[in-house]
Length: 335
Image (cartoon, rainbow, N blue to C red; front, side, top):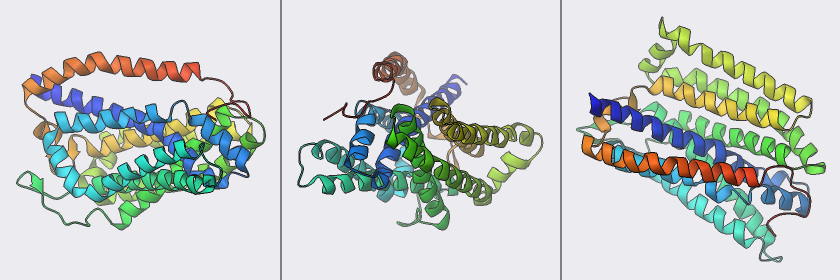
């Protein structure tokens, strides 16, 4: 029983790491996706400077989530990696290329436009691949004898393409609300208008994904619509509507913080919705959290180190955002 409890504790920790990654790296990927919409070089500089102190630290949570999956749920890792090999590799290459572009664009004038497009391309590809991987996981991975038994291109379906479009649109919304929060003047006003359009697009894609997700697996529909579970699940769409209303009101009233928090709330609620659909599976439709977990001794040993390191990571992340809080003035920043 204790081993079963440990596996669910670890599932919660990994889910928390992934959620924090999406909340933090989501907005700086969104800034990159919005790069072509900048009106001039000054706007692009301000946009990039707004994420310069935090963007690489945000990716710490991706490492923690991926490393935790490998160490704690090795069976799930062994199934997911071959099933999603192409989108995961493309995502990692895009993140590397994006990081290179971030550094190099400040070191040149002649090739700055090339690195601008590289920064945009790396951000967009990373977000699209994350969305496709999510969609492929939601629709289910074929497992036979505790091993991946699907085809090379099973991850590429109409549903995964839908989620592959939805995620970058949502990230762009996070990026626009982040710029609205930390910048001022012309670029803030511009991105506030962009955020209004992105809010509508994000809600549209959220609705489409919510409609088609229960169709991917009968168990999903049962968890959402069967009484009495439906009473608890119904809270999620109600909160989504509330967050959407707060987002819209915040942008229309030219608030700084409320739109960003509301956009983050949409992602948190979407993540909760995925959890409702998945539980207790870690690799739907057939691999549960308990089945995929490492031996009890490994879970206990790794948990000790994680409970020590996790507060440290949270502390330095919070400290970084606290140090660089407030509005970024034009001309200030990385360069």
